[in-house]
Image 1 (cartoon, rainbow, N blue to C red):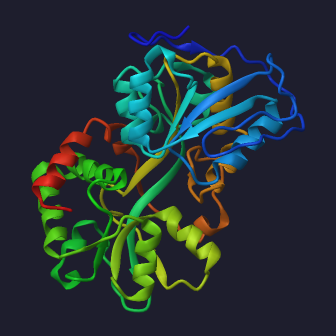
Image 2 (cartoon, rainbow, N blue to C red):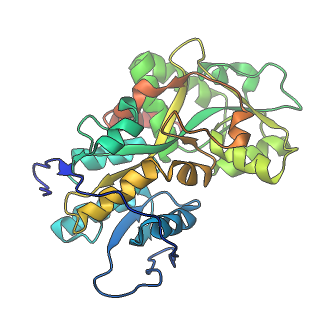
Length: 347
């Protein structure tokens, strides 16, 4: 049973299922079922802020279980606001986000139910799920230093080094309104303290960065010579290299002698008002286990389950130290990060 005001654990009452052949017809706003459109067919409705490659993932789930998936796509904040507005009348059974802060804010607002599933807790490390198991990470990406292999021989190895004056006029950043920027700064507040984090952001702003609201365009700007160094998510470079292997951009893993490179996660959680909680749990469990590679490889992200191998192009990036400890705190510190960015004059 799910209660919005005081969510209680949902027991997974699901049995082992045989894989069956089936397909899922999907669109960006809703997707119909496979071959069985009868009224009693099992289904699940998903609100997803994770866009890239999601339709084939849902198709694979339907083929494996026979459960139809209907989904609505939007930004994480938009979907959270929609859940609040709909309340107990929401059609959403599962919400997926592209950012840990937004899903934690949803949990704090009582929009998600705690899920009691050994299958999930065995697959997803403790640091990558909420303390009350209201959400679970499904894949990881890292926001790291990117640099031109043609013009940079000694790239920055910390986030603070991007504020070195030698990068003045040569730095590209995502705007302050984007969740990826906010979550990175939230992790800096946690790891460095507010004053030091503010000093780092001030130094970035002092370098007169070129603000570009697309990581793909940021990487292309590096290749074109519009900037020499930047911050971007690891999967964007993986996608670009898969299309254009000679792209002259590489990763410099930051903070390897400290807290580690900033980690953000794609997540999912069962809504507190879910009409189909069992189907939502089954989808969540499948994404965390049998569907881990399908989900993470679709967007060149690292699997949340450390025992699942990432895509080959990610292996080529080498080993790194990741800041897992900050993931659960990104939602709590999001308001502080937004305020810090504003006061620093970060556009």
